[in-house]
Amino acid sequence: MSLSYYGSLLVKYRDHPLIPFAIANDQSGLFNDGYVILACFDGSDRSGDPRVYFHDYGYRGEDPAWDKRYNLDNFSAWLESAKEESAQYKEEPAE
Image (cartoon, rainbow, N blue to C red; front, side, top):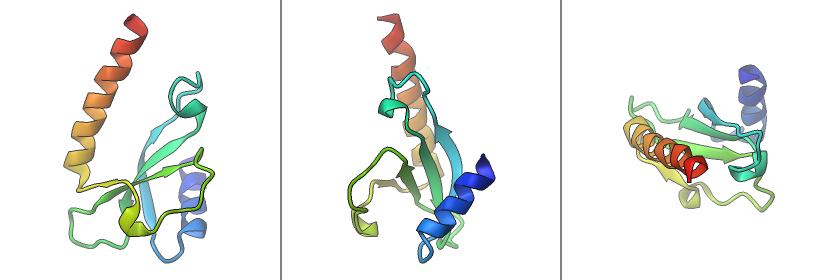
């Protein structure tokens, strides 16, 4: 599946390559109606600390310009956000 997602991103974003490294895939539909969301490194950033962009397979609108897309500064910011989201997700079913 990793190669399939990576290949589809290469086709969709020819001028702005995204390199997926994490996936949210909740088949229950509780999160994002069951659609896959990929966290991706900015493949055109050679700084060693690239921004993280998200590709949402459930989004059906017009793609926003790159400067208006939701993104995080780097992997560290993504990891912190993922930890917080994971904790919230684990609390919700318990309530």
